[in-house]
Image (cartoon, rainbow, N blue to C red; front, side, top):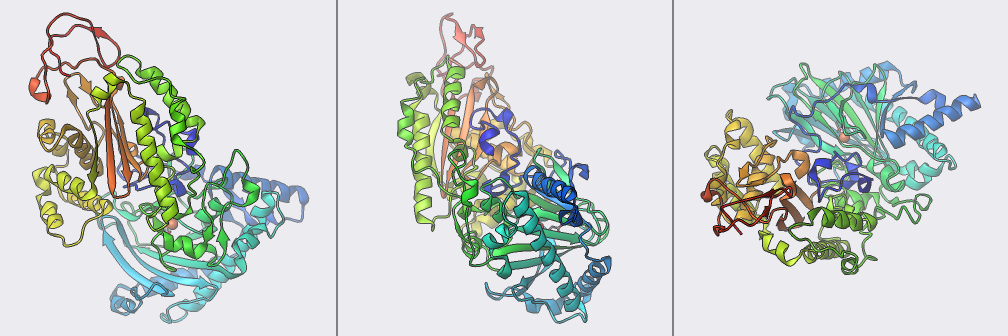
Length: 620
Ligand SMILES: O=C(O)CCC(=O)C(=O)O
Ligand SMILES: [Fe+2]
């Protein structure tokens, strides 16, 4: 649970990639950092489950296998399934059919399956953008099986595979139920698996034709119970492990890769979690085909945390809704149920905050932040947050529900505002003077200001975005920045973009944010800010920024002098920059500072890390 992980508001050094990020996610440019700074590791971390053993006649063997399955679901969330009984010939039939279906010469034929309506049963698309590179065919496989009629034999091969894999997933449902200590039809009943809604995404990734790091499928989790995945060749699929490592999935011959779906996470109230994964197409020298089948609950099955997983210390963490509602609430439709992390499973989350009055916490925060007590203040603030489960809200684990879920949305906004007030109310008089800004900026203003602050090499995208008739979302904006960045060789020069130029853009606060936003978006950010006077702003990495849609960025200053908290409340953003550790700032170059009052005298002053130093220049 994220509450166990990093106290992110306070100390960015302790931020860990959140293994539980799936439903808890995230308006994230990338949870698994796509650049080389996160190296995907080889897959000895992926456990194997022997299907046959789960049904062994030997009691001990079976018990051991069931126990192992429980452990694997809880501690990993994905596994290779072997001994499942589907013959290699069935797999080969599917890959042959798909390879023929995706024949490059017959692309015009496939266009008949382009999106027509939300109730399409077969859908085809060719995606080629910096954010996604694949050609896919999606079909509804259950309750009714659908498949293009051509090429010959394709439909039969696919149907045979789907029937067999469905049986296996039903078997896994039994085993999971038993492993959890319930009757064997527990999962089957909860998800109404008899009329379970299975959607299969069959993906073709051409050989590497774009630059290194290209994304085949961006970070996402999949809805449903289990996802079964087969592929013709290894290469490209990566999954984020519980230990925060990005693992290459190299499926053993004839094994099936099983990945837990979001709705198993919901049903078990987070005990079993779905995991973020993606496809990177920078190393596939040959074409790759994969078949990812999302075995879902029945569309009308109401899925919420089951009572067996809810108690005082585990309150319901997700909101119950039907499978269909949850897909739609996330902006999907019945066939495009896969939700990229940008839209995540907002709707699944409960706003378990209504009982808590944030105002009442104020009484517990006895320490007001002053120049010299940052550490104590921090300790108390952290403790209260932790004790009252406010992490979820502050670290982005609890994400803002869509506006149209009115009650939840309003609750969320209320809580966000209350938390900001709480934070502000804990500032002592002196510290308030150091709050260099607190304002609400509209998304459009932010984007415009960000555009204005971009270096010359982005002038093309600036023109394009400004000329748009429809507003651009932050996500799209980010994608455009990424694309523009990729087309330019001299990305490093952005880092050298002078701070002073940025600072001139608007106020100092927005400028700090803009620099952070732009640079982190283009994913170069190890040392984003440099020293300004004695204020050294810590490097921020993508992880720092991608902790959630609602609190997207937290930067903490070296020497605890500056914190910047960026909360996104749907269309508005609240910036809060605290400059706390130092009584005064020193600089070798007065132009670095906007408001300067020279310091006369020889009084001791406190530096960011509580060093006592003399100073001759003062800014306050
Ligand atoms: O192609 C792959 O390996 C994975 C695709 C995937 O994750 C999906 O379609 O949901
Ligand atoms: Fe997936």
